[in-house]
Image (cartoon, rainbow, N blue to C red; front, top):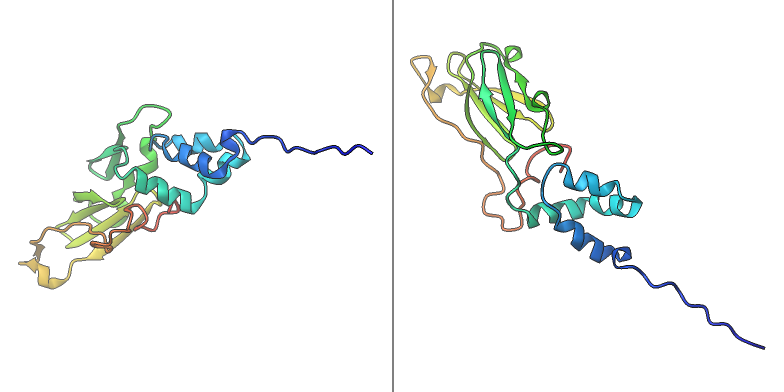
Length: 178
């Protein structure tokens, strides 16, 4: 009676989930990189879309590319993309019609942590805009920060995580990406 040994086929280097994750971790942090890698096969998609892997990816690439800048226009906050295709974000995707939020005299105070902060001195109001999700929240400036009926203060978007060493900026906002 002859016995046959059954041998398992050798695993290829990218069949190892840990090795595949390490390879994908090193693709450039551009908007198209992970979506394009996820189209290779189901295994790659599984790794690239895993929430833990995406957190590691953001930690590894602490400084993501600048996608574009915002330009103040009469009734619009216009997004001006800086990257070339396939990483170019269409201008309409992150632009905001300001006419829905009162007077048209909004001015950008700054951008940080995935949010844009705007000020309307005439209405004593702030607008916090999150381009990725499209959410915008209008906040009335408390009277303690106004003088003679107009806002006399500067403001900034801050991350509530403070000095937490394990915190990765990008996880601190409410966008569907996180």
